[in-house]
Length: 432
Image (tube, rainbow, N blue to C red; front, side):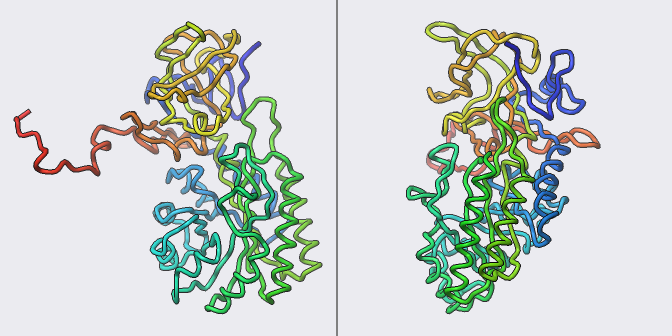
């Protein structure tokens, strides 16, 4: 069986290319581990999902989920496209402002935020998706002009238990039965504009699920509006727009999703008189995941009870596989013609037995200095990376029409100790 590659990647002389760039040559120039991102693909993904919704509903906006990929170059490209952002911390908010995103296009959706964090968001003029009424109440008399609450509709949908963002075991949001009282309290303390927020799920590839959850939150908004007399300025469907990680998976048809969602909104509007609210979504993975490939080098191969292919891609670089057991498709970038030859354990350099990019994966016979390519690495790879075991994070480069740009340098030793200090009595005064 032959190796399979994903678009927008191509094969030339059995080597992996992204646009007109030989990825193995980029590894020779920039070293490994290396994250390579296509600006063209990033813009295409944004326009595809934006056009699907905006062509059907004029009051539509995107708030890109920064947590999926917080590189300022990525955010700046999307800001250039007209996107807003969804942030989950004050530092993500600061990154958005650093990239020139207008405050009116920033939405702060924290979980268990401190009073100081919430006050900082309000000081910046940023709207907040409150996780529950307690988060609003800790502000005291420093109430916001706009308040939105995250509703847990008890509809579970996540690729892994750790990414399931709703249902009885989720730590996020409040049940609808508590929501009307929360909005009443918000109005009593001086809030004048209102939003409502839901998370559809994580990496959802079923259009029917979007239609179901969207219909439920639109109807919930209608019931709350009817009970309290408030009108919603915006309804936020959150993220969850999925991408294929496996060759056999089909792409999400966002045109179908948009059509069914807008149809549900129009029905709810006709029934409850919602008043033409702004519709927001918060895609992260859908926009950035398939724009990027993670490249690493084979350093060691051993076969005892199993065949272990040792690479320089550790779980400090690719955490998702160790944390969730997530699947990422992998090929040999320098020889796509090499046939699969039985199951392999593809592992990294970290001193943990969970440090595996793939388990029992059908893979070609690997050789020292082969280049492996890990697809769909533009979301939750760089943003979840660390310096565990004293390992450096990956260099990141961006492929643009005007050339190749280094958008994140590899860590240096100075970066490891930059924010540390040895007390004076422990300093080595031996002159070494």
